Image (cartoon, rainbow, N blue to C red; front, side, top):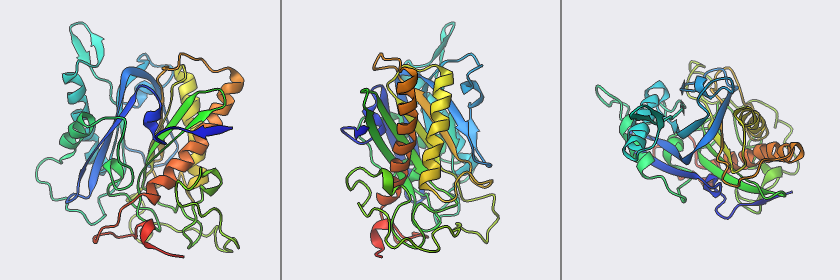
Length: 336
């Protein structure tokens, strides 16, 4: 059994802070995760269209063990500039991997496609994401906004407006786990044409509306609802996420935790991991608890990673704020 964390945010995991920066005219934004001290990290990519920076170094067989932060960004490939901005801020704070007299902040990143969402993308010679990355890192704190914020600012699903979601849990062994996710899938997070979330079995209280499962269950629930299906299929998608824990993990264990968290995508989004989504999960082990989970406790932690990720996905869509320019309705504005 697990219980909810005090903030129900990824920052319930000690050693993690999060900052957002958004541009309403652009209809896009950036979310920065700051790890202080550096955290053990890994990544698992299961979508067919990812956009990433410095993910190779996260493989368990490669040398660098820890990262100073992570960046999630809108903007498609243009958004990879956001990591340079966050890195610049971290360097100013004296953070980074020591190489002789130099400190090099290690900041892997991932992007989602939000270019076709009604925002003004005529930014001139250089995109604004480097500045947004700097602002997001500088804003990192324990409390942060979810919904229409940061990397989820311009996100969309097949049926509703997307958003930035987060959730946390405490396992029976007292280990904290938290999820952070920018929800922008090709598929839907709700069942059929209802407002009921696929993640309903994992909901804690009424954290994303308390609707539970629909009754009767829609006969067409398994039908595919695909965002912008008439457009080129290689665009307009991707859900990117972070799963974090205060347990002491090796890089290999962090990799396994990232893999387990992808089950949360599958339980909250239909369909997920498509050839036209770049679905990705970073994993962080801060070690702040000082506790190394036993094999049995790690099993529970992996299950909690999946359920917490599912909850975070639903919370991101549930918290999205309506805007007159929206191409999809905000969840709060629609009634069954």
